Length: 163
Image (tube, rainbow, N blue to C red; front, top):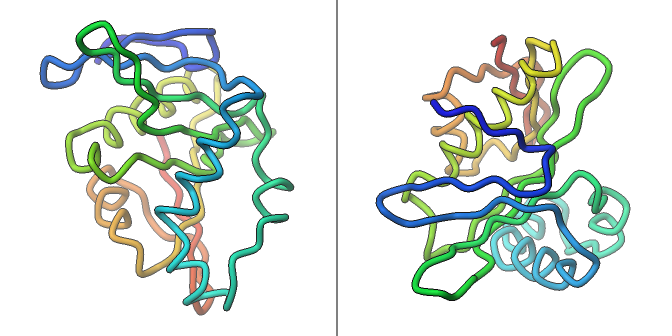
């Protein structure tokens, strides 16, 4: 895997001949981030929490931790996803990854996961964690990448990978 630094301003990745740029979030990205999260997760939030809580988004998503994934094909840039990632004292922590439905199952999520794993190692940490609803289809990806549940409640689990 090529070494890219997720904390730098811009990184380029090529997946299946498509160029993607990973860049720092700007203030004007928050409508995209909010709408993508709601599009992808509204039904899960309703099923598990009973409602959509807009304030939860505002409390947990911090611009300094978010990188926007843009497709840069044919001289146009289209935001297709984001990753919300930070470092805690003992681990890297993925708060959220969302990819537009039309770009899912194309390898972007796998690449982003490997990228944040590398960045965690670059910060001399060897554990990465995330929280996910247990019935989310992405759990299979996390398991395939070596993540194991370390805590579960009725609806969600915290998964961890030792790098």
